[in-house]
Image (cartoon, rainbow, N blue to C red; front, side, top):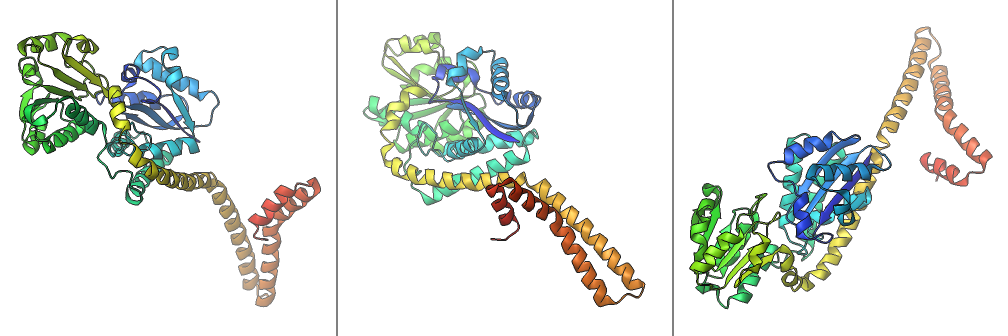
Length: 418
């Protein structure tokens, strides 16, 4: 059995490519079913966020499995392998284990140490569990990764500062507008990232906050918390002109805001500047919007410069966190390797039990015939000892004849002779 991870993320590919390999919540169950139908796949978890798409699998050991997995990914998303091959990364066994632990701990995120990724990893695992697509080894790996992430949070300062894509979006808004107290902000979506943005903006006392979402009930819960007005997505065209800042993050597979809609809004605003921050993958705002005069469009990739300014204070904590991951990875791999010995140990114990039962039966039979108990015990001990040491003795002799010092030492260690 082999553990592996295949993925693409913000370090290896631009948003234009990443959005083409995302798995939407609506198609995730179908993707998992298709993935488990691939030859040799024993279990799988799909992690798909705005910054990464990763497949975590347990498979039967097989050479050239990478190519078949890449083919499946490309076929599923209607891509040519040459479009994504250079952007994919591939990890096996201990590297896959270490990678997942680093991802869950926020060490591989665009924003070092950001906490949202742990929730996303947990959700990906839960989604796979619901579809019964998680093998025992994968389940143990993900549970271990959750505990590692918790340990990193507890023992280091990796999450001591509020640094995230949501925080970076708000930082950008404050850089462009001198005071948020004079602006109206429209948030599109009501997911976790938008929740964080809304809370950041509330702390900066924005003049007016609007939330547009497909489901008004979900948006209303957030609006009640931050003092915002709720509108439906169908109302965007009529309400867009009121917004000085639009920050969008939905799970839509198609753009929510098109060039024509923004042009109409800018005309109503008489070309007063509008900041649009698209932190969704796939993108919520058509790229052509960025060509409209006085409409300033930024994507998640554009936020990188802002984010980098907040990384320095987390670097020393990251070193400590990496040490924790390394230790925990070794511990998990030790457990995983031990699983390969389970069947051998079971067979060895079964063999010993059969031998014990045989010796016991012979001894009891002799006692029933009136044999001297002391002689029976001595004979049973002698026979049992000879039978137990027979196979190890032959192996020791063979290793000695072959001059195999390493094997001889392993046998001595296994027999407790050193």
